[in-house]
Length: 191
Ligand code: 5GP
Image (cartoon, rainbow, N blue to C red):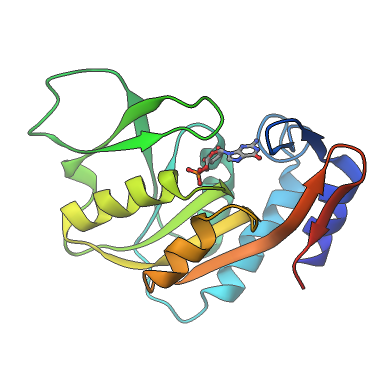
């Protein structure tokens, strides 16, 4: 998505440790007109798919998922990150290793809001090693729901997550795929 690549070039900041900061428009301060373009693009890419629910993970996926959901006219469900023990029963739970913090945490989704009648679109801001997506996919599987695919705003193509997800046969639509990035020269994109 040309508009997104241009915005990353203009406002993205590459930090050490392969972290791209897009805080000024995507996941801290949010440019809503821009997020609407992202939502429209996901809708265009998944046109014709029957989707009943958008699933994301807190916190940075929520804003993007909400705007996207306006175009699909379905609810957004977000997995909560928790340290609560003793949560089995009422919730689906999975473990995710955080790329940005390096810790493993539990994610939970109430059983009340996801079941075998659902067809899910997963939305998230970044794809790096694929741990967040795998955790969400695990929850969709536990619910017996079906997965339409995953929509990612920024895939870091030099990390293994994208390849892994595609190899599993999951439909993955990434709006920008970064081929390489550098603190001095910025990002180059996959064509
Ligand atoms: P993964 O689980 O694929 O390794 O990482 C995806 C998650 O880590 C996303 O939910 C996102 O919040 C975070 N993340 C991964 N890479 C980056 C990055 O370069 N910049 C930012 N801001 N977040 C990232």
